[in-house]
Image 1 (cartoon, helix red, strand yellow):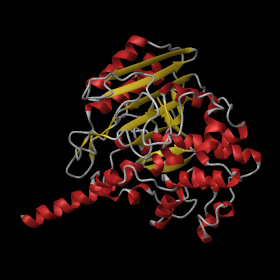
Image 2 (image 1 turned 180 degrees about the vertical axis):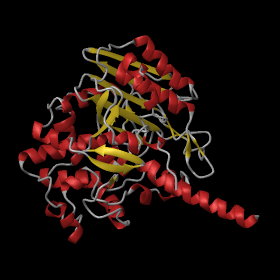
Image 3 (image 1 turned 135 degrees about the horizontal axis):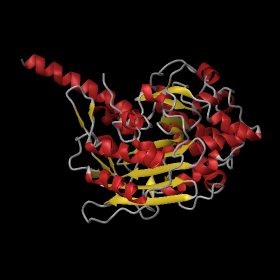
Image 4 (image 1 turned 120 degrees about the horizontal axis):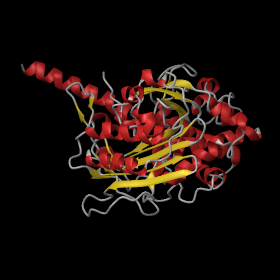
Length: 439
């Protein structure tokens, strides 16, 4: 009996390690599955066509996410010339301070879209070639045969098969322990140091092979590429040429461990390993930088994606390259382009990105025709439990969040169709850690 218990315990530990690697590092819509990611949209009509914004319905749906157990959620929805902002819940569980729609928020991997736009600006200028080997630009960073096989495009669409650096940087996550997060909370990493961790781990496949495998390391290398070809710090270049060009007033790369303005706390549960949930709103952003350290608001995110998809930040040729997708494994399967991916809903195709950092999740999606936008953020992460096999057990928050997202994206008539209800994802679409991972 003791031997069987021990084997079961070991099996669960292995499952947890696999879950930690995939669920903590993969930036995707929680509701995406291999089947959903690869199928055309249901219904065939434009997203939210004929639907304005039912503010009462949106308010009720947002409140339902809070009532299901999310501490705080804030969102902005746009439909044509109409817009709605809402927030529900608390920013601080100890004081009861409420969340507000305009709060600053750590948006995690949405940063990748900003970084990709910056690289594509250099492509337009002729300073970078998408299909050139990264070794041409960074022979000292990605040397030898690997540097000749991996192209700039492979970095941006996650087909380089360079391993993710986050688990080597925070090894206790493999045991679902926050110890290494706490030990390194204020440590200042360098991009080069983190890239070495990713390159030093076993590759996830051959360069260029599909499906790709999502890796934050790719976008740290993209940051180094920007610095090499522009002679400017990557964050400064992105700030001047992407953030300011898009007219974003509340978006920045934080220079200190603190969020630079009014914000919520960020509560991390690590699937019950941290009980009660711990606030991780303060930490050094150097562990993720050009892959995930931007702070923004839901309004700024909608402005950013609107400007991008209208061609205001890059030209039509570069935008077309961004929208050339390949399958990428990230817990589920994403139709991933260059820092941008598509997600098909019953009312049509949406483009955008999601992100997750310790204690916070974010999602920002825009319809193909640009008429419908949804951005939302939450302040509690990995609140679900795990079953005996290490798989995530859906929480009521997940279903309420999925219902809100579908209503916000498709409008009442789109969300009310039988196809829409059948396609409702079981996981909330705004955070990476809501993808069930099984051994």
